[in-house]
Amino acid sequence: MPSNNPTFLITGTMGCIGAWVLRNLLNDGANIIATDINTTVTRPGLLLNDAQIDSINWERLDVTDATAVHAMFEKHQPTHVVHLAGLQIPFCKADPSMGAMVNVVGTANVFEAARKHEVRGLCYASSVAVLGAIEHYPNRPLTERDLPLPNNLYGVYKTANENAAKVYWQDWQVGSIGLRPYTVYGVCRDQGMTADIAKACLAVAANEPFHIRFDGPITVQHANDVARIFIDSALAEYQGADVFNLRNDVIEVAEFVASLEQLFPESQVTFEKNNPLPFPSDFDDAGIQGVLSTVAHTPLKKAIQSDVDQFAALLKSGKLTTESLRN
Ligand SMILES: NC(=O)c1ccc[n+]([C@@H]2O[C@H](COP(=O)([O-])OP(=O)(O)OC[C@H]3O[C@@H](n4cnc5c(N)ncnc54)[C@H](O)[C@@H]3O)[C@@H](O)[C@H]2O)c1
Image 1 (tube, rainbow, N blue to C red):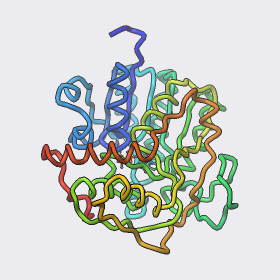
Image 2: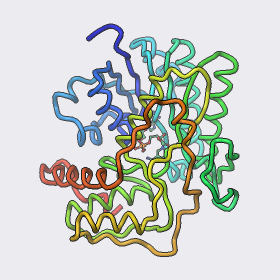
Image 3: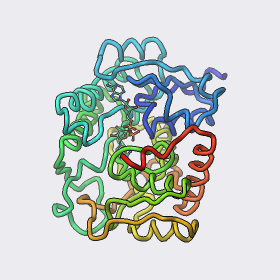
Image 4: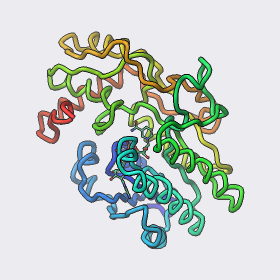
C-alpha cells in the first residue's frame, strides 16, 4: 500500500455509521484502525465479507480511558480520525454519568490525542439533538447559527463537544468538523425510535407487518451517505472548528410509506397518525456543501430499493433475523 495512503482511526466502529464507514474506507483502500469498546463484529459483518473483515486492524478501545486512547494513537499514528463512539439518548437518560463519560470525556480524550499526535483531519459525530424542542425555532430550514437549546442530556453532551472543538481550534489549532445527523437509515440501523424507518425496509424484505411509531416531516439520511460525508469531512483537513447540519431528504412519513408501497405493493407498513417527532425537521446544509466538493446523497427510492434487496439477501443467508422489529 502506498505510504501516502491515509491511516484512519475510527471510534465506535461496531455501530451503524461505523460499519458503513468501514465499508467505504475499504473501497477507498485506506489503512484502517477500527476501534470500539465492543469486540464482536456484528453490524460490520452485515456489510463486509470474511476477507474484508480479516483485512481490518481491529482494536478494543474504551474512549473514556485517556491513557488507552493516547497509547492507541501512539501505536498507529493515524493521519485521520472519525470519532463516532457514543451513547444514544435513552442510554444517557438511564445513566447520566456514564453518558457524560463516554460522550464528553471520551470526545475530550480523542481531541487531546489528535492534538498531541498531530492528526491531519478529524471529524466527530454531533447530532440534531443539540437543537431541542421544535417550538423554540422558526418555521424554516435551520442553520448552524440557530441557537442550540438541547432538552435532553444527550443533546447537552453533544453541545459541550461542539464548544470544546472550537476551543481546541482557538488554543491549539486542532481543526475539526462536527456533523449533525438526524434519522439515519439503512442496514445496521436497528435501535432507537428513528430506526423505525430502517426497520420498515427490513419488514418489507421479510414480508412482515410493521408500524412506524410517528408521523409528520422528518429528515432522512442513508447510512452509506452519512459514512461518506464523515470520511470526506476528515479528508478535508479542515482549518477551523465548525459543525454542520446534514439534510439529504426531508419528507413526510406518509410519503415514505407511499414510496415503499409503490416499489413493493405487498408492503404491510403503517404509521402512527398525529404523532410527529418533537424536533425541528428541516435543516439547511449549505455549510457542508460549501466545504465538500460533493455531499453524498443517494436518491430516496433508489436507497429504499437497495436496502430492501440487501435485507432480503441477509435474511436468506441467515446473517440477520427480524428480531429488531419487535424491539
Ligand atoms: N444513528 C443516528 O441516527 C444518529 C443521529 C445523530 C447522531 N448520531 C451520532 O453518530 C454516532 C454514531 O452513531 P451510530 O448510530 O453508529 O451509533 P451506535 O449506537 O450504533 O454505535 C455507537 C458505538 O459506540 C460504541 N461505544 C459505546 N461506548 C463506548 C466507549 N466507552 N468506548 C468506545 N466505544 C464505545 C458502541 O459499542 C457502539 O458500537 C454517535 O455518536 C451518535 O450519537 C447518530
